[in-house]
Image (cartoon, rainbow, N blue to C red; front, side):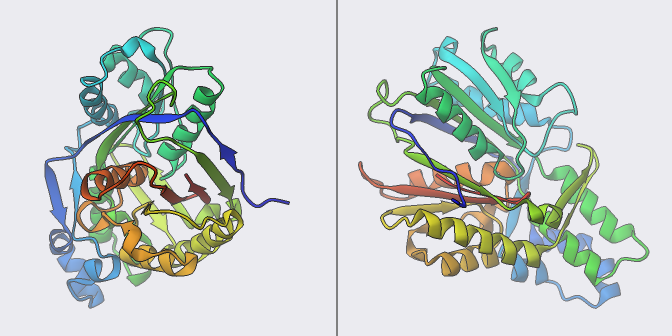
Length: 338
């Protein structure tokens, strides 16, 4: 029995991409200053957050900024270059951050962008892999000619989760090293909006082509990372060590089944320095071909992998015919290669 799915595409193009970044940034030093009393109580040395994760800073939007606003800003900038909105048959919002329980965040993005009434719109929720899961779904629909173009968006805002985590660590009378360990991952989270426009490769032959996607699930690990609360008050419990070890074990098995030998560039979901180094070592990847952004942007949830690919497009010399790999591991636990 095969361990992973594999779907090949011959007619799917990535037409355009856009990101929207916050103008507020919080350093790891600033977070630790807010946790001074907790650090003193537990005899923890300042600098441990950066030492453990490699994250120097992360961005946040205002706590009142809706995820749909963030996604809309990214999409509007993209649509300025692709003006025929009536060709968009599908809009999917993919963020971990959401406006409300209902309606869908996609509904408000659809309204703010002024997309046509027949444009199907909904949310996909799949933790940090939500964006890439939506790209896969849209690729199937484009390949089968059910739709012409798909707009995939996300708008992650870590402000309330960062503040909520700091408040819990500062105000919990029974705070201990175990609780700090469970919440360290929450302190690495950043923010961003991302929008990708997909269409047929035959109509856009000079654009990057999506060749295949492959996914694999190990849902026995579903309890290793759990988010709680509302948009205004969020917190997360993460067994970071187990998630790193078991997640990469699963990813390695997935990777080995695919037996991919040729590639010029690799982009992975951004978690931490330990994650990136361990992933490269266990999968036998050439680290010189991997670009990391977590140092300056943190873990931006569903925006992290597509944003890092976009940064690579700007920072690296890519040639026609280069093969580029996107690798993601998300809570649940699921892995994806594209």
